[in-house]
Amino acid sequence: EQCNFLNSINHTKFTSDIFIFPSPSNDKIWIESEYPIEKVEIFGLNGKSLMTSIQHEITISSLSPGIYFATIYLRNGQV
Image (cartoon, rainbow, N blue to C red; front, side, top):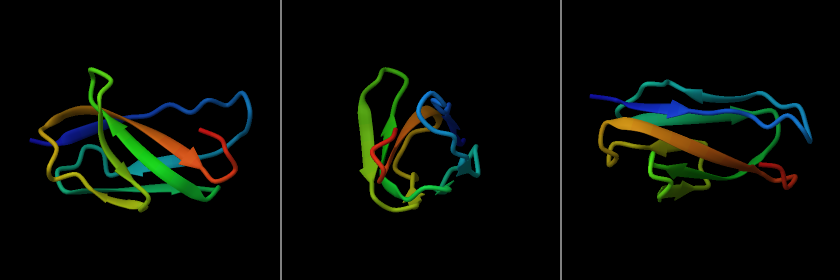
């Protein structure tokens, strides 16, 4: 089984390409952005924060198979 990540980008304040790959995954995900990433927070469908990372490569093998959301905080203060 694998974890799927859903993401959407709020373009009201800036334009940025943020990529989460691979999705689905069962071991690690990588996050890329044209702006420096300060922190990534991963949430379950119930809205509970499950994991926080300052790395661009995140090990997700401890997560149960399912669908997750990621909030990506950029160094310029944007989310």
